[in-house]
Image (spheres, rainbow, N blue to C red):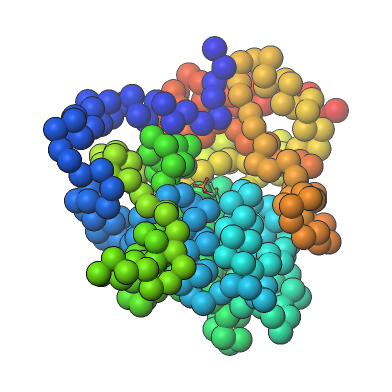
Amino acid sequence: MIVPVCDPGARITSHGDAIRAALDSFLTGNRYILGPQVEAFEQQFADFLGAAHCVGVASGTDAITLALMALGVGPGDEVICPAMTAHGTAVGIIRAGAVPVFADVEKTTRCLDPRSVNDKLSPRTAAIVAVHLHGFPAPVEELKNLASHRGLCLIEDAAQAHGAVCGRRRVGTVGDAAAFSFYPTKNLGCLGDGGAVTTSDRIVAEKIRRLRVYGWDSQRVSVEKGFNSRLDEVQAAVLRVLLPGLDRDNQRRREAAARYTAALSSTPLGLPSFDPGAVFHQFAVLVDDRERFRDWLHAAGIGTDVHYPLGLHRMPAFPSADLPVTDFLAERLVSLPIQPEIAEPHMERILRCILDYSWN
Ligand SMILES: *Cc1c(COP(=O)(O)O)cnc(C)c1O
């Protein structure tokens, strides 16, 4: 049996009874779309984050698109974002009609480097999308300063950072809006696709509420060009069961990350920055001969993954860019198992296996 890098099934199983009870109500109820579950989850998630408004949508990618559109970003605009991120970051920007302009990241935080963002500014820049990669809080205060001095919007891509803390606030409450994904493997994941936008701006929230359902106003008249992008009732019900355990699960991820950090600091591995506010969606180390290292772990029954093997700027669907740190990371990152349910004997096996690795 391979120790998995992430194991959403373990979380679902451990909440099996509560999830089954929540799902049972759908067999007798008659509300499936935009009903009481979505409304209650939106309130619960906004309260958890300390956000004024939360709007459930169909995915994290849609959350980015709808946030940008509601903030008035679209055709003719450039949006600066990292290329060391999930595809959805750039797809969300393109779906809004804007052009992603990739900036480089910092080597240990793997998040946007504000100096590189500064270099990428142009008269067409309308927004910055900061990704809290691997659950590590991006330097949003600094980016917010940079953005507000130039009249740009700042959107947080918090798809990997539910519950992370930046200063005294949860991530997702600093920018003009934030995008969350509830894809099953995320820190807070449902049984399919789901997402949400948070914002402190009531007008932006109301616009997203129209955009997610055909551009409807309260009379069901389409007053703008909308989408069908709704979080459904079943997923919202599951998320309501899982949200109360999120802080505890994130704390377990932090404990595992602290153990990795302490045990591996004497090795040649490039360790991620340790930030007490991070929620370690991944624990990704840098290693020069990546395939040999991964084979060694695999032979010992330890799963690894790579997030991400190729910067988005190297993919045909996206604009290219010169990003030396992103390329450096893409060649060397290896994600180690970090799920909250990781068993103690597995953790010991992983650490022993890495310490036994011959580095040359
Ligand atoms: C998962 C993810 C997305 C996309 O979310 P989906 O729900 O899969 O559309 C966007 N950005 C980041 C950083 C992600 O990890």
